[in-house]
Length: 135
Length: 135
DNA sequence: TTAATAGTCCACCAACTTGGTGGGCTTTTT
DNA sequence: AAAAAGCCCACCAAGTTGGTGGACTATTAA
Image (tube, each protein chain N blue to C red):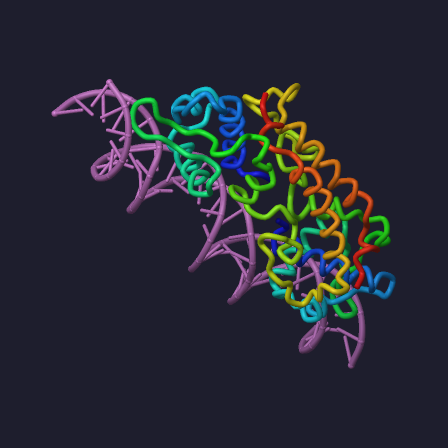
């Protein structure tokens, strides 16, 4: 399951996608419109900024905005960033790989099944972007 | 990600599948062969018993065994039981559904995407059984 | 140059989950 | 009656989740 944090992130990013090229958006505006606890949202947006998804401006007329066009930001990227691995097993993960002790990956049936699940999921989330997330 | 508990559960169930119809298997044997902490495994097997997946016999010659044939026990069932929801969002879950406040499910793009992900995943795990999990 | 605006950063928090462990009790078989 | 083996309860440390509070810094406008 996606954490609440991830769900908040997606809502906020969806909102920022709609406002793309309309100048910076206040944290407080996003929080209010999307009903996200303000301080929590602050942390999330900062994290997304550090990950180079968002940029911000301080002072009057400031706020947050997408650094790239919504259709250039993949859903998979956001999930990995905010939520962590997409795969069901570490030994199957592309970005968070950890080898599996006492499951030799050459012929582990669970491993193989989870590769399939991973690819099925990636087939979707790697091919959708924030542009697909607008209301 | 599947919890370690789930991974242990699958290893244990895989082992019990191989020994299906060969009489009860000791917890200690499973723990040793599959390198699972004994007391932890005890909890897991008990839980699976209460969920009607396993049955057990006490005393000498006792142990655990599958209640049904391995090919009758779906991987999806075990995941839900031991790990919880398969879906990425509560509002998309078939077995752990919770309605989504401030995402009206009629036209929420994230919702729709996650339905796709869910179905892609279920397409696999609902059609594989413990029989597919033997080494 | 000062005040207002708005993001940044740090520290702390309660509640829950995860991954266990220990010890005794009960049931079954010999 | 003793041994075997599962059952059950309680407890634990460490980490994660979902926050909150407060001060600080950068920017802009008056």
